Image 1: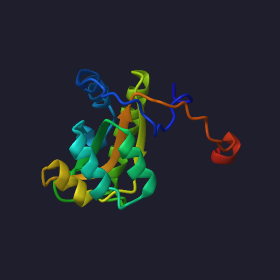
Image 2 (image 1 turned 90 degrees about the vertical axis):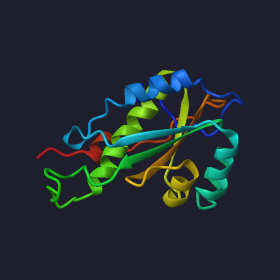
Image 3 (image 1 turned 180 degrees about the vertical axis):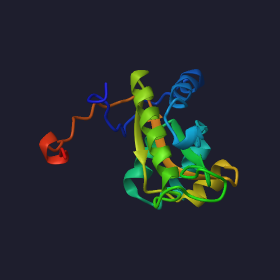
Image 4 (image 1 turned 30 degrees about the vertical axis):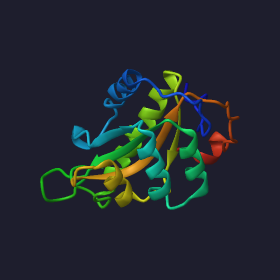
Length: 175
């Protein structure tokens, strides 16, 4: 399944049923996280006016993201609760990575979301060129959360080819 999943940027003109999206989030909640804090949050947007605002206010005018948002009927705003991941107690971070564990946890949740969506026949693409403060305002995120990424989703209207991958020997080593 992992080898078949692709980033989809062209979608059919059809909303994904909210029950299917609920199933995808229900699977995604099983993503591992630091201390099992489960910091990932999913704000699902299927309102066309709000998606349009995300396209004009939330992606720093990055043309690929703007155009993709024009094609979709659904966007998941992946956010995370700040100040938990990376800590063993309330005050001290446990490693030199400090609060970067938050984004690591969000990345785990993002991959799980995209694979769960793929398993249900839903295409996704992850957008990282974003304005997290603007997106937070558009969707009304609580203050303790920050945006990690936008995940555009929908019924695929394309079958992108696989992009080349490095050889396994070039990305691994044994010690």
